[in-house]
Length: 142
Image 1 (cartoon, rainbow, N blue to C red):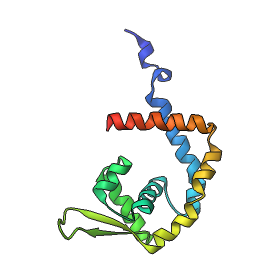
Image 2: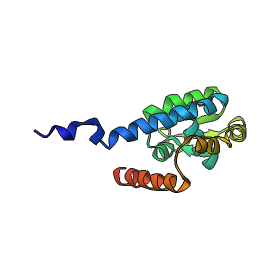
Image 3: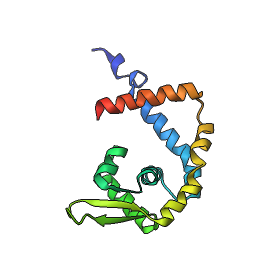
């Protein structure tokens, strides 16, 4: 049997997992200042762009299922950042809408991407290459 294939250092999944975890950890001090978790932050980024979206569409943007999104959305709603409203056309669908308070949070978050850029040891070209490769992977797997 070829044991080399089972070595952690030979797995593509491990550096992706570890790097993702480290990047999310570096977001924490910035997100703590605006009282958001990383998952809440990425939900808010989609809402800052779309203002109102169905939970199903939100899940597609974030590669998350409704079981993962529901508690996140409940928490954001309790903070006053979003409203969840059942669709009048089809009660199975729930729409998420940004509130005025949620829109105001955008001003506090606008510096986070540039602050995070300073935390990553990649040149702009390397970051762009990594971004392109990761989205290629997501597009082909999704």
